[in-house]
Image 1 (cartoon, rainbow, N blue to C red):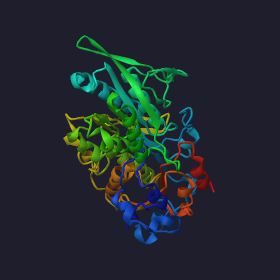
Image 2: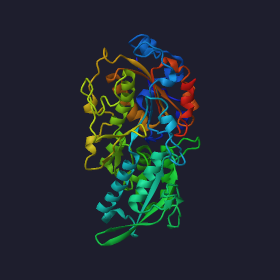
Image 3: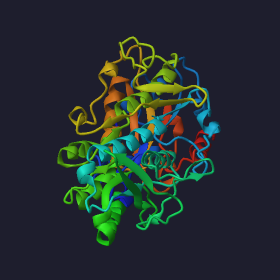
Image 4: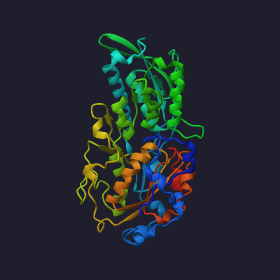
Length: 454
């Protein structure tokens, strides 16, 4: 019996949802699975051997040929948060090549960031006659930044500023720093951009931006974003024409708190179900990071490694059940050992195609034969049990795919603040055949590999 994601006491204290990137993401409610799975608070101490098929082979002590497998040699996939330096973005190749069966699964952050920026710019151009609410010739926007040290958050901030012409150079790239408030256009981390439509030129100004980090230290914080739009709207609300957010969790918090009632378009990222549904009520748009493809890849690379199969099986090459992905939905970077799902803009034109964010991807929905692919035990953590995207979209998808791929997965939920809240529950890695890890901070891969090296 698969174990559910554990609800964390600190998540209750937070009372909010946090985001990922990817990805990413947060919102205002936990997955129903979070509320029913309390047995995983000590998941590191349970063997789960009664729930697996294949005897010792499935319990993590032996490989398919009956030989002992050291924890350091077991398949490992990092997902949603790519091991990297949070200051420079440089990939942590030691973590990405921890062993021969280590990979990363995420999405193409730069491609998605450009899509989001383009989506906002095209919306402004198409609605120029009504978007300048106070008629001052300045299209003012505010920006909710998820985590200033997260590569996906940095990319999305840069994508918005690049598309709207408000970005300035810093060390050879667009400055992604929050600016506080900038109603007079004097901030140095951004500049005024310009858009010309129908022969008329408009100034585009980032009026305010901040990292949405709560007092406990959790980032991508939806409640903080809701408070921020309350402060901004009371100070210069008539100047706010557009809201941009690094994810839907924060975007929906701002939308529900203020912008919906004031007809101000809000743009997010992740295509969470509530955000997609809100497009009918004026939410400007969002970006689907193909979570259905990401979740499949997260478990598929483990399945292939556990089977001793070519890594491309069921991905670029059809497997024995007929599962395969086209190159229209993902790319693989061999040098980075990373699989990236491609992004899709979700707007008023196509949102009805994205209303169910937990529907598995049809081309990879075929059940594997358990006699050929015996059950294996996997330890998988989510950095924050209250993260809206991971809990309400990503995890339900994983739980659908783990059945298809014959994987018995323990889902472990963190508090979004400390790695130890997660690693302390990996007390006996020898009981698992493989690991899927979603870190709190991208710098902290060593906290997990150190456990596997023991």
